[in-house]
Image 1 (cartoon, rainbow, N blue to C red):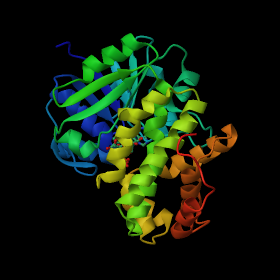
Image 2: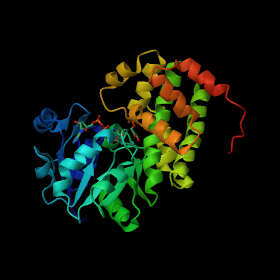
Image 3: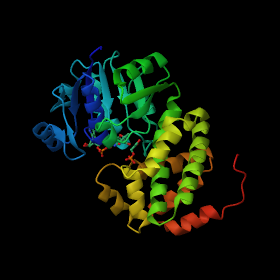
Length: 333
Ligand SMILES: NC(=O)C1=CN([C@@H]2O[C@H](COP(=O)(O)OP(=O)(O)OC[C@H]3O[C@@H](n4cnc5c(N)ncnc54)[C@H](O)[C@@H]3O)[C@@H](O)[C@H]2O)C=CC1
Ligand SMILES: O=C(CO)COP(=O)(O)O
C-alpha cells in the first residue's frame, strides 16, 4: 500500500472516525482541532471520549497542537469541521496548502451567510485546488466500530476522485466515485432538513406512514432544488441522496433526527439543538435552503414547514396540517 501523510482538521465525531479508519489502514494521520482543551484530552486518553468514546487510537494517529504541525509534509488534508466553520478552518490551513496537496471536505451543509456550497467556498480561496467532497450514509459511531459502510467521493476531476477512493477504501469502508459535485454536496446537506422533519414526526407520535411520506416527498423537493442548481437527478437516487436520507431519518445515531424528536415532543428548537451537544447541521441548512429555494423559485413545502417550526412561527401539528391540505398534485411534476 502507498502510505500517505494525512492531516485531519476538526476532531469531532466524524473527523475522529475517519482518522481512525485511515490510520487503521496504515496511513500516518495527524489530527488537529480548534479547541485546545479537547486536543489535550485526545492526547491524554488516546481516544475521543467526548465525541466518539470507546474507539482507541492506533500509534500512527497523532493529535497535534497546531494546524501547522498537522499540515507539515501532508499529502492530503481532510476538513471535518461543521459546515458553518469550514471557511475559518480552511483559512487557518490555507498557508500550508500547496498546489499538489489534495483537499477532502466531509462537512454536510451550505454556508448560511453566503448560501454557498463547501466547494464554492474552497474555489473562492484557491483556484485549481485539488478538491474532493466525501459524503454518504455513514454514522461515525458505526464507522469507528468498523461496521460496513459505503460513501462517495466526488470531483469534476474523476482521476482525483479515484485517487482519493484508493486512499480511503478498505474492506469495511467502500468508496464509490461520482463527478457530480453539486449533487453530492446538496444531497448530503439537504437530507439533514428532512431528518429533522422525520424526527419531529416521530416526536409527535406519528407513525411509519408519515415518515415514509416525509422521506419520499423530501427527496422529491431535494431533487427539484438540486437540478435547478445544476446537479444530476440520478445522484439523488444514490448513496449521497436517498442513501443518506434513509440512514439519517431512521437512525438514533442521527443528531438531526434526535433534535427533531425533542422538538416534536414540544421542546424549544434552540434548547433541543443545545441538548444534542454536537453539531445539528439541519438547523443551519434549513435556513440556507429556504433562502435558496426562494431565490431560485423552487417549491420546497417540507423545508418551508420545518423552517417555520424551528423559527417558532408555527407549531409542528399545524405545519403537518398545512402540508396535508395543500392543493391536489400529481406525484411526478
Ligand atoms: N458525525 C457523523 O456521523 C457524520 C458527520 N458528518 C459531517 O461532518 C461535519 C462535522 O461533524 P461532526 O464531526 O459530527 O461534528 P461534532 O459536533 O462532533 O464536532 C465538530 C468538531 O469541529 C471542531 N471545529 C469547529 N470549528 C473548527 C475549526 N475552525 N477548525 C478546526 N476544528 C473546528 C469542533 O471543535 C469539534 O471538535 C458535519 O458537517 C457533519 O454533517 C458527515 C458524516 C457523518
Ligand atoms: O450525515 C450523517 C450520517 O450520514 C450524520 O447525520 P447527523 O448529523 O444527523 O448525525
